[in-house]
Amino acid sequence: MFAGDVRAAGPHFPDSDVLLMKTEPDTTGHKSFSDIVAAPNPTMSGLTVYYALPVAGAVRVAVYDILGREVRELVSGNEYPGLHAVGWDGVDASGRAVASGIYFCQLQAGSTVTTGKVVIAR
Image 1 (cartoon, helix red, strand yellow):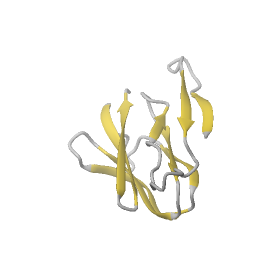
Image 2: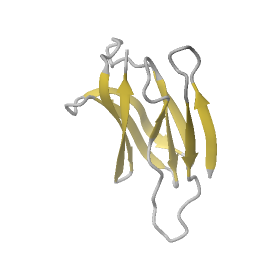
Image 3: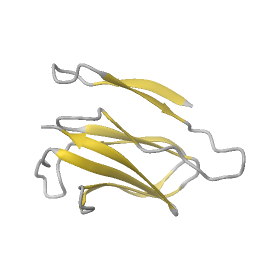
């Protein structure tokens, strides 16, 4: 298990988020992993996306807008088991800041896909 808190600095971030992620493989024989977690959420600019992998393999993490269009790919490649974190600075693939709204961070690991909601409030 991994536990911790994430605090954002500044007057616009008075709260903190608590993270609790299972990092050990499931002993029942299932190859599951924990949900993707983004913090701080909501955010005014950037955030960190956390995810845990039970086994090594191909991984892809991307951000999508509310219409399902890819905004930016954050990770693409092979990764080892364990806890991972990747930052997103709140900009699209062209380097432009995204508008306020709801976005989705999606983790694809092998044949499994999980998605988490992110709110950008500029």
